[in-house]
Amino acid sequence: MMLLSGDPPRGRVLSALLIVIVLALALTPFLFPGAKAMNVAAKICIFAALVASYDLLLGYTGTVSFAHTMFYGIGSYALAIALYGMGPTWSAVAVGLVVGLPVAAMLALGIGLFSLRVQAIFFAMITLAVASAFLVLASQLSWLTGGEDGRSFRLPELLRPGTVLLSKDTLGFEINGRTLTYYIVFAASGAMILALLRIVNSPFGRVLQAIRENPFRAEALGYRTVFHLTYANCISALVAACAGVLNALWLRYAGPDTSLSFSIMIDILLMVVIGGMGTIYGAILGATIFILAQNYLQALMGAASRAAGEIGLPLLPGLLHPDRWLLWLGLLFIASVYFFPTGIVGRLRAPAK
Amino acid sequence: MSDMLTLRGVHTHIGRYHILHGVDFTVPEGQTTMLLGRNGAGKTTTLRTIMGLSPPSAGEIDFAGASIGGWATPDIAMRGVGYVPETMAVFSDLTVKENLVLAARSGPFDPTRLEWIFGFFPPLKKFWLSRAGSLSGGQKQMLSIARAIVEPRRLLLIDEPTKGLAPAIVMALIECLAEIKRSGATILLVEQNFRVAEAIGDTVAVMDNGAIVHRGAMAALSGDGALQERLLGLSLEAHQ
Image (cartoon, rainbow over all chains, first blue to last red):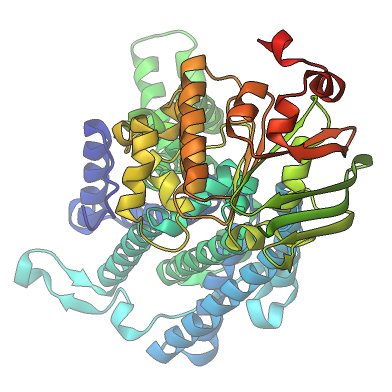
């Protein structure tokens, strides 16, 4: 209970789902040792933290921001530029963190103080404009960011796949630098989600919820809504930048498509909505379902199409053809929003006593 | 007795509409001042202007020795003004306890004061950990008032607390407001129900078309049917 800040999942099915997801992610290197499975698991961890940080804004304050991928990108690029420029050393990793995180926080502070005074729609528009400008900058400043190609870099020796930490002879399976990197991603993402859970269940989190419901009432109780929203924006940006660092660490690359693109922003929005806004736990479920669907739906449909063809069913093999996976992914999202308007967690979670 | 609150020539515009046209009145310390008037007279806007939610475009508002006209709402609240809006303004997603914790700005609850509040509003104790959104209308109003008095305030602005409530709950609220008044609180109360005003008010200010048209003792207005008829369009007999 302490670990979950007194805010357990509340619901047997939900608890069981979360336990299965966390256990599967924790044991992925041993249960599903292939490169694709590891990539999918790492992406789920990183996006769960990223989506949870966005949920702090959207779900707990009702603020729509389109600059979240910008902060994610700042984290990614900070690490990539430091490791590319300084070489694969731990001091480069430290420089990436020391530069990237404060830059993200300061930018969030500036945007917040400048635009959170105005109506929510203006804040959304300003974040959209700033994020667009940042995307263009990242593409144009080739000497620094690598332009459209991005920056590939090498990790410190300890984190390289070739570094064997425990050979197969010792435990029956190999633990190498890649496995260690995965567990860094897993542990850091878990820590960020638990920290966010602590924040939303703190008195500060309650004030955010009060502001979401009625900012004027919150002000009439003496709370400066602009400052509270700005703090939330900064915390959210910091976590997003940390997720960006983890993303770069895992991919050994930072580029516009993997960290700054608006399609990632849309993915984040969908994950929040599917999981359930204002729950934090929804981020874990939303990220898991979305990323699993993104990576395995095509293969699953291929198998289903073949099976339908073999037993001679009309129409179905064509409908389930792997090329139509995006159509089914879209239908899946529409169905989830229609049947779970409060998100999966909103449906599965028992109300607070 | 000194004045806790003084409004002098206060004008308020909301968008392009000129709502308050030079409002002048005072709220004596330790007394309950009733702000009466027909619908649309500007009573709620007056409270919102004092609270900084609809800032004044001209005039002066003095509260406890400070000129608060143009201050930000949080600063006015932190100076000791509690505000109960007319819309049963609770935070629905939070529990009763969390609603009160939010309002207790100076630290943890004083248990004695909490018991004092539970004495007026027993349902709040019963539903302490329930979501405020699940409370009935009367219970929400109780919570809204409890939030304003969970800590001692120098001035309470209360907007039509009995609006839309069942008669039995209205009686309980009158008892509660009378008890808050006996505790020495200074209250500015907007109320449409003249019987409630009579039962609680010490002084009265009557508004019409965004200006004060009458000020005086509540007892004087209460005993003068013709004045009521002229100012409020009612006589107590007709109202009864």
